[in-house]
Image 1 (spheres, rainbow, N blue to C red):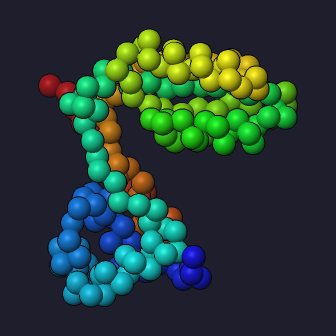
Image 2 (cartoon, one colour):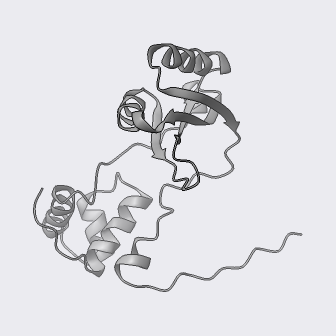
Length: 176
């Protein structure tokens, strides 16, 4: 990983464009940000090397792929087994955004929260049952089906922090 340099407004504009459509060509991104394809490619390459861009991903429609349930999963782990449990959970296929929850009132257990999709309740319960049998550090598992109302991969306003832009104000649209 190379040494990071501060991002400028052009870098932020490139990040915004990639958040909206990661399949855009360097030419198309360059047109949006006022660069030719060569410098656009160089900036994207640099941000990948610096770890700012971790990857370019396809936005899949899970239901079209046959997955029926989107769910949130909480796994409680004994505090002395947190590192090992975190490693194990990050290796389970179809789990993403594995997060360690912070609870200053409980030093005996740690909760990991993650999300996934599955074809049925039976599948996720079988996977979690197998994990509970294979690893004795898990104290409790809770699975909650979620009805996703919105999914926006560009939800992070990179300009807010990087360029000190004001948070855009909005008001709730009026219903008819």
